[in-house]
Image 1 (cartoon, one colour):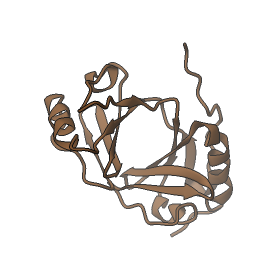
Image 2 (cartoon, one colour):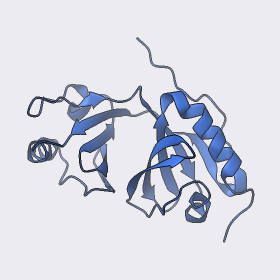
Image 3 (cartoon, rainbow, N blue to C red):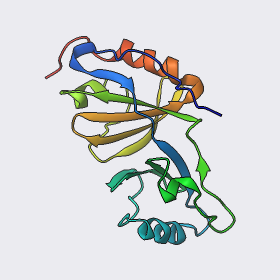
Image 4 (spheres, helix red, strand yellow):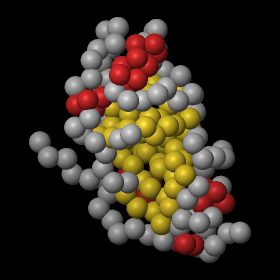
Length: 176
């Protein structure tokens, strides 16, 4: 079965900020509840990650990006061939779930991103942070890998609406 992107649009660019689909990367959600944290940490360390990020934080380690939006889950992004994404083991009765068909990534990029994000997210998103929030009624996991980049993950069924919300609500001109 071939995956089709939820967003096939030309990047928009209000106010010097580019909004575009995030390039495809495999996504798995690892369970951390019920004492699984130590086992998942050992597994990730065995595959090159130093430590798991704290709650509300993200880390990039080699080919993998680890997002921890809350205490019970770890989102792992990377190439489809990475051992942590191909066929990860079970952890105390729970197997990591492929969430690539559920969450669609949207990238927001540009100078003045911090000010622009204030127009679409109710909470600040500093560099290295991950938070669960919303674009109006659309659930979102937001991550900030750098000063000029932010990623928003929205449910696939809301991808078009989320993209349109961003292009409507981001400022029309540069914000100091």
